[in-house]
Length: 204
Image 1 (cartoon, rainbow, N blue to C red):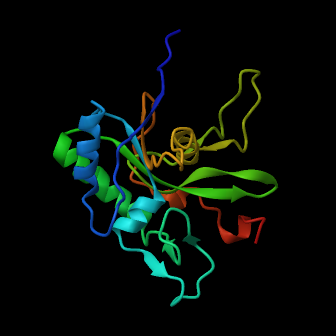
Image 2 (image 1 turned 60 degrees about the vertical axis):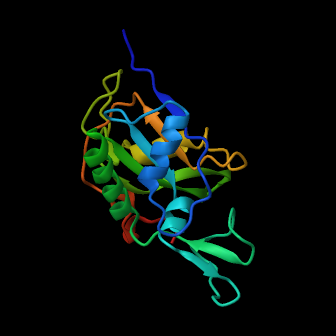
C-alpha cells in the first residue's frame, strides 16, 4: 500500500523579526534562497515569538510587572514578549495572503512551547490555526479488533506543531517550518476547538 511521505522542512536564513515586518515577503526571500516554494495543502508552522515581535507585543520588564503569559528568550535582556492578541486571526490573515499571492491553499499553525502536567520537558503546541480541522474524532468508529471507540480524539494541530519542533532548533534560529504530504481536512475552526471547558479542566 502506498503511503504519503510527510516531510518537515525547516526554513533557514530568516532575519531577526521586528515590528510591522512583512512576513510573507521575508518568507519569499528565504524560500528563494533554499529553492523552496509553497505547495497546495502545505502546513505552515510559525512560532509565536516572531508573530509577537511583528505585532509589537514586546514589553519592558522594568516598567511592567508581568509574570504570566510571557516569553523572555531570544529577546533583549530586560524585555519579554506577550502572546499574540488573536493567534487565530493572524493565522487566518496569513493563509488568505498566501492564497492571494501564490494561488495555493495551505493551512497555518502558530505554535508555542508548553510544559506538560506530570512530564518533564516541553513540546510545541498550537495556539492559533486556520485552514485545518483542529481535532480528529474517532468516537463512534471501531478499531481493528472491532472495539467501539468512545473517547478517542486526536489534537491534530498540536501533533503537527510538536512535529515541527524537531527542525525548529532554538539555537539555529529556525522559527518557521513547512509540513508537506500530511493529509488533513479543511476547516475554518480555530484553536478553541481543542480547549477544554472549565468544568472539564482537571488542572484548575
